[in-house]
Length: 170
Length: 188
Image (cartoon, rainbow over all chains, first blue to last red; front, side):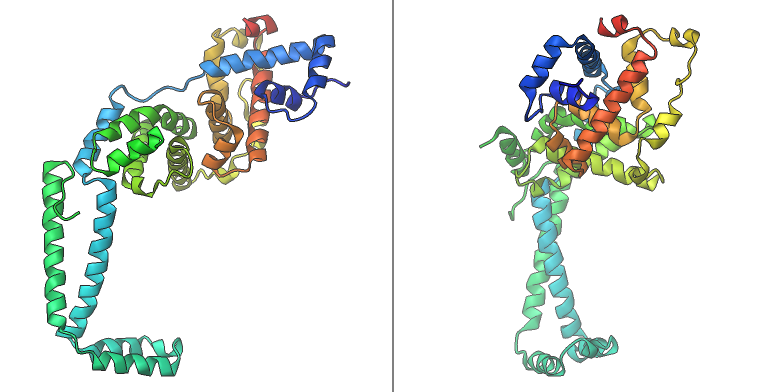
């Protein structure tokens, strides 16, 4: 067998050789040159184990925790709240435009953006008809949405001030 | 349930203080990545803190598909990647080509060779002369004992590329040490 390559020696020491390991061992038994090269790598690997980069400060975890406590609520709750607030805000915003403004204004905005060029004419006409025939008490929906936002905001303030995750909604 | 997953569940359930346990368990690994990737000592600890803040904020996204350590390490690596890009030191230029020529002590005199006797310190200097990716790979493999596959997942590299960086780095380091020390010194 020819001498082991640099890569073969490294794979041998990493113990990641899939085939031919026995042949390598046999060769190493009889080849002083390859044995010495293995020895060099072994020495390097031992040194690499000691080559610890300079570390973090002793109070690193405490510093992180100080920031975390200032940031609470907990990550899971926070993401649920963000989602609820975003969706509620979007719905309330749209309804507000339709209720306090004019639904036609919203449709005009779509027209200004020339949405028609992206939408099928029939679809756009049907959308206008449905919007016009809506018979929902938009004021009630808006009222409930606003209350939800206020409750969520109070909850966030309480959790932030206490610096620990409490929630009376979730 | 796996211990790490249980820890994540506790934090998500509102036990914020359990996050300190997560930090303590992973700060060495995160430190290894950040300290190897980022040259500016003044920025390193701040980046480590940012990494753990990001881990905390995104913890609900951890599904246990990979090991928690791999997930945390990936966040650390990506943060370093963004930092280097922002500093106009993109890792795309992270090759060995310039390093071979740039090694400072290539033609050192015998006097310079004896300047620093501590092999360990010398090796640390030589590691710092490697490209950021290579020095990170060598650290994750030898200090954190991660597999080629795990390192590849963290750094978004194929396993073959990880091996290639690792083998070239180690060969280079061996040659650099042997150019400065006798074999017997190295073997001690």
